[in-house]
Every structure is written in C-alpha cells, then in structure tokens.
Image (cartoon, rainbow, N blue to C red; front, side, top):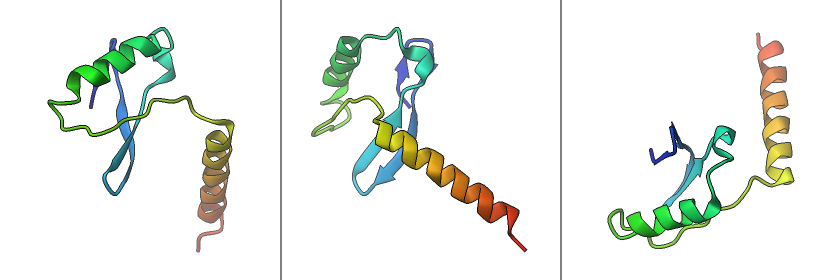
Length: 79
C-alpha cells in the first residue's frame, strides 16, 4: 500500500509481474506531478523497472459495470 495524501491507494489487480493500484477519487486534489515524483523517489528502493500512471478510461468503467451486472444476475439465479 502506498500512502498519498491522507488516504491510501490499494492493489486492485495483479497480472503476472504487473501490479495495478487504484487511487481513490477522494484524492483528486493530488497533482499528477506529485504522484510521478513519488514514483521516481521510490523506484530504486522497490526495484520498480517501469510504471504508468493514467486515468480510468470509459471502456474500463463500462467493463466494471458490466461485470458487476453479470455477477448480480448469477447470484439471483443461483440454486
């Protein structure tokens, strides 16, 4: 877990050697430059080879909503 501001990010997915962290929307006031600087500062200490910082895409939101809807339907029809 990485602390940014008063809240903390959380690991939302792990795909092989790739870790995807979520930064809560309550941290909108945190500047991108601060996050990039933080990543550069910890890069060597945590053996980070490469990183990407981006906003959630509309496609990702759609898939998350669609996935939740499928799970709800499965629970409703579960025997």
